[in-house]
Image (tube, rainbow, N blue to C red):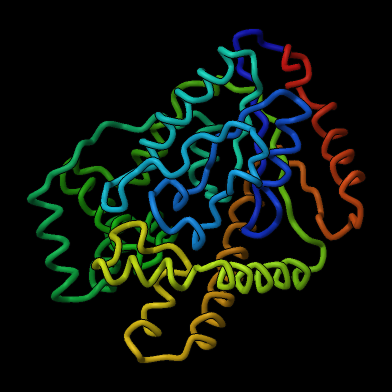
Amino acid sequence: MDENKIPLLVIAGPTASGKTALAVEMAKLYNGEVISADSMQIYKGLNIATAKPTAEEMQGIPHHLIDFLGPDEPFSVADYVSLASQKIKEVRSRGHLPIICGGTGLYISSLVDNIIFDDTGSDPVIRARLEKQAEEEGAHALWSRLNEIDPETAAKVHENNLPRVIRGLEVYEITGTKLSEHKQNSRREPSPYDACIIGLTAENRQFLYDRIEKRVHIMAENGMVEECRQVWEKGGLATAGQAIGYKELVPYFEGKAGLDECLDKIILETRHYAKRQLTWFRRVDNISWVKIDNFDDLKKFIENVQNIVAKSKIMCYNIV
């Protein structure tokens, strides 16, 4: 045990796998506070569509990095790592256990691995030119250019994810170095954390898919459609508008599709997203997987996770 290390409990996994509920239970057991690792819950608004935990679900446990950013404000992985690192120190200074909870794999990996981001800056002129090019030629044209320059980065970025495609091209134009090379050069310091990483999954994939479908219908019953309509009527959102549940409802608001059709699209896209999340987390080192469909009793499920935590380094620290 390195006394200079900070103990960290990480609860990761796909959407609808029960991460929030588990994080709260762990926080109650180990005197912890929850720090979100969700790239959409950071934005104000769309509370239902992004499944932000309610006050009832939080059960009095402090939650951080949720609902604090304007929907049009830019926010990078580097920004997340900086803010999360600060919150971890604050939680630890109170003698509590920091619990990272979320499904954004890039956030979690960058934080736990202590990725040091090169300050390449940005150039608004270059960015504006690339954005205009995307409007005139389409997203695929920009992605194809990125693929020629930096195929490693392009392979990890969907062509419709314009902010990341543009960032890859922008970094190359500013520095003359590929973004993938910047990332390879960024691992300069050892991680300051002793992390116990719990990954939630399902042995039967259909079990998870059924949970996703049920949650989408519950979200619709709780006002998701009305919430998203209000946002759409105000002109929509920028980055936050990429949240699953918002963009799929736009055809309904425009009178081009029925509500049931759009809800089915949300369920399908959420399933695809869950598969991508699982693929990402399978690449994470030292992750302990817990199959949620192997437990029909909450107490046994919690005890299983406790056993994993008990065997980890974080129990060597004064966290209770």
